[in-house]
Image 1 (cartoon, rainbow, N blue to C red):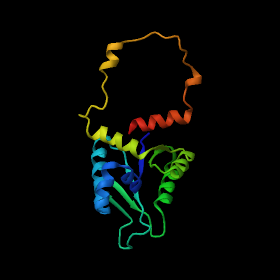
Image 2 (cartoon, one colour):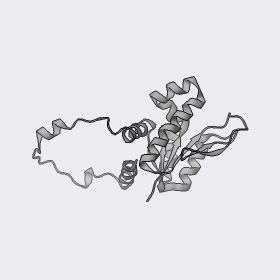
Image 3 (cartoon, one colour):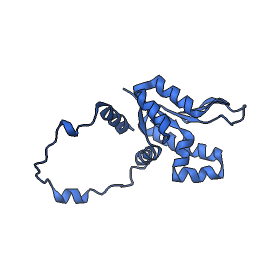
Image 4 (cartoon, helix red, strand yellow):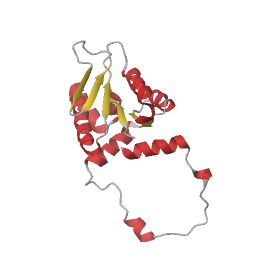
Amino acid sequence: MSIHIVIDGYNLIRQSPTLSVIEHRSLEEGREALLKCLASYKRVKHHPVTVVFDGANADTHMERRTRCKGIDVVFSRPGQLADSVIKRLAARDQERAVVVTSDREIAGFAAKHGAATIDSIEFENKMKMVTHPDIDLMDFSEEEEEGWAPTTKKKGPSRRLSKRQRKRRVKTKKL
């Protein structure tokens, strides 16, 4: 099953320490920087990606839907919030969708409709790991020296994640 990544664009930009600095200079530059990062991510992972931006206060001459560097870009209609567009996409794709947002209301709605959700910062970190694999974020040298330690601690169904959490984990591992 292929996944469809639906991103709350301005939420990701404003949560990201690097993209928010660019956005303070110009809103357009912030969007372009995000799309550049997502295009390099898509070259590696090949998942369909849709970024939704809030067009409620935007000019009416702006295109509502466009495709840029292989990424679907959607601006909400004037008078409509991006949240409602993201919710509609999550409800349409249901279990196929992975919604990237730090907004709890959107995340709750998406989870209720079967979509997996991931925090904006967590997705940005996954995106950086995929696009820059030469950066070692973890040092495994200590684990190799310790070896296996016997334990009598029991593992069983009481420690097992719920079915919904296991499905979410599978989807987010694909990111």
